[in-house]
Image 1 (cartoon, helix red, strand yellow):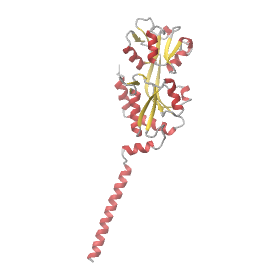
Image 2 (tube, helix red, strand yellow):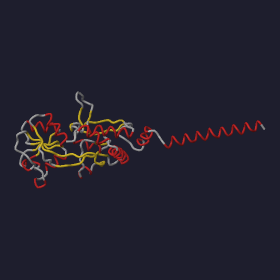
Image 3 (cartoon, helix red, strand yellow):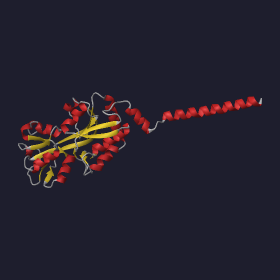
Image 4 (spheres, helix red, strand yellow):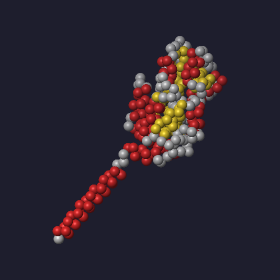
Length: 277
């Protein structure tokens, strides 16, 4: 009888151990770690290179993307920081690839880059080539002119020479006809970078430069004798350029962006670079 009781006692103890072990297993499945969740998310789509998230940009657009002082390959700015947070959420390493602006959209379209962040504005023409995320920031196209000039509005600049950065919405708007608030293609010169357009203004080769307000402020700060007209030219929203043929990746990036907007991260990053007036 004693042996029978021992057998019963051992059996009950073993049952309790198995029960506790099963509960522990169930709990770990219900609450996976952040790293395992990110790994599971990353496994649901493909990127240009395994374990990496490649961002196409043009690092001539402060404060959204720019080369760090004293460096040739390190980047910083609003877009770079937001992209870094997105990569973290997806469990990937962010790689920033600095390209000519005219190649940024094409690189995503052809699958050479995973996504694009370069102060991109959504336009019908661009939507033919790539998809777009939700908007994460608002930009304004403004005029930079020389101090002491008599220009006050866009109307005052009709018939004058306007400089822009090539392939940007600023160039598209300015090249349109005067009836559509443009200046006519013959009056607009496109430069490879915004900095070159500003240099042309200083050299008297153009009468004004049209560029987004945030970089415009940086250029005016760095170049004495220039000012920004008080009246904005065009207001537009920025979004992330996403591949059309990799919907899973595009959805993952946009979902991560939405979460960063919802928890205030995006607003905090923008506020770090652009102080409220």
